[in-house]
Amino acid sequence: MALVSSLTAEDLQRCAQYASRWERAHVATPLLLPESEFRRSLDAFPLEYGEIIRAHERVVGENPFLDVVISTDDLRRACETQAKSHLVHLREAFIESGGRPGAIAHVVTASAPGFTALLRNVARLTGVLTNDRAEATRMGARAAQLPEQLVADILSLEQQSAVTAVDAARLFPEYLAAVEQLARAVDTWRV
Image (cartoon, rainbow, N blue to C red; front, side):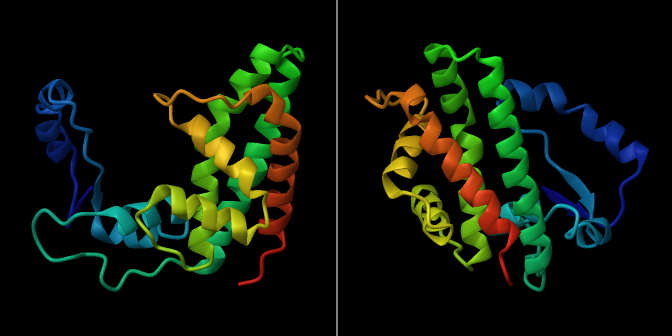
């Protein structure tokens, strides 16, 4: 991310000249935002900007995030949207699986990263700001009172390269119940 004072079409054109070079170097295209737009958008993107603020490393210039505060109400509302969306998509994907165990296993495995990201966002609602992804995931699960073993199993599925003995299809009923519980918890969360 680069916060700038202004951003014109000409600026974008100049940056576009570097796109292929960044792609070859496996460097993500930077998010360019005028600082005033960034500050006015904190309520619209509390999860995304909160993660940038939490994990950023300053390359040059003053730290633009020193006085930036994301409203807890905005964060809770975004978590609620994320939880309920995850729940709706999980149910829909299960139906589309036709009940086939291999397809259900794929649904659970493919949704694991979204679920663990959601739990990390819930952890932020409690004020947790750790850089340890697994610990933040567990803390979010504890805040929503989700079963620890289920969360451990889902975390293991998130590790694409890890060989796991977890039968993802077997997890589905408990996983669905946990996502339902999470959606209720965030819906009734009081800040």
